[in-house]
Image 1: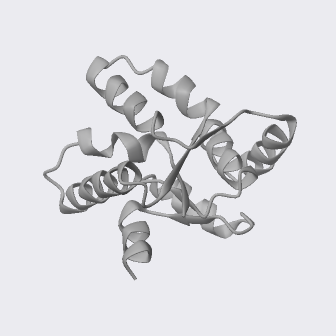
Image 2: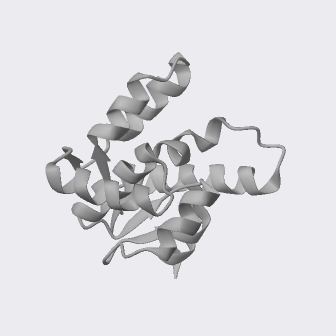
Length: 146
């Protein structure tokens, strides 16, 4: 299974764990990373992931994200097709950076695009993403385990 973890999902383990949902999503993300390390799923990287990660002012978060991105079997370079698709996603209310993440995953034919962003989850499910499913980390773990 080819999986794209967006920036907010990669960073979920650093979020405040006092909310049950956040704690469960953080655990799911860590499980997904472990599966990638064990080569039981393949992670997909992108130029956008690298750009956002390099801009992170928190050294520990940045280092963690770079380690996760280093597990990627392939890094999607932004192309005219990705930019075109991202503009279309932007028109339906997906934030520009999120639109590039999603377009990168769809263009690379990822099986799953994983995010913890509620608005991106909702809008991503309303549009045509081909064979790429837009899922939360918990939903993705449930799919993998079933």
